[in-house]
Image (tube, rainbow, N blue to C red):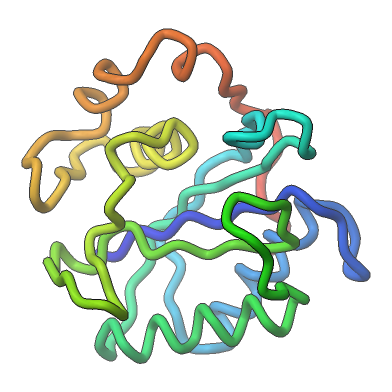
Length: 169
């Protein structure tokens, strides 16, 4: 299985942050990515600059028959289609699609790092994974999401809000 995280903290010509994420899901499906499970939306402050708009994120469990390089190419194309432009690190963005775990594959090169190197530190990644795939285990750390959530700071555990809204597909 493949875990991805999709986030947005800017509105676009397509609509709200939630609309941007929903469009990303639809474009993934058009690219022959099979959606298995989608978390609720989660809202978190922008990090490290909390003056930027809050982020909305979801976790998505998917299946894809081709390799991680093709999957990465597809996610980058989708980001561009929705309107993502190159911006400084941690700045607001219309859409961000991160490959969190690609079938447990471990890779560390200049172009690819799998699993995502900050998975275990991000509340907006761990809470959605715990919701949709509680048996998931980090490929390197060999710990599940609940264990990793409990290792987060108390601030990180309380500044995330699970919204009662889901993706429109």
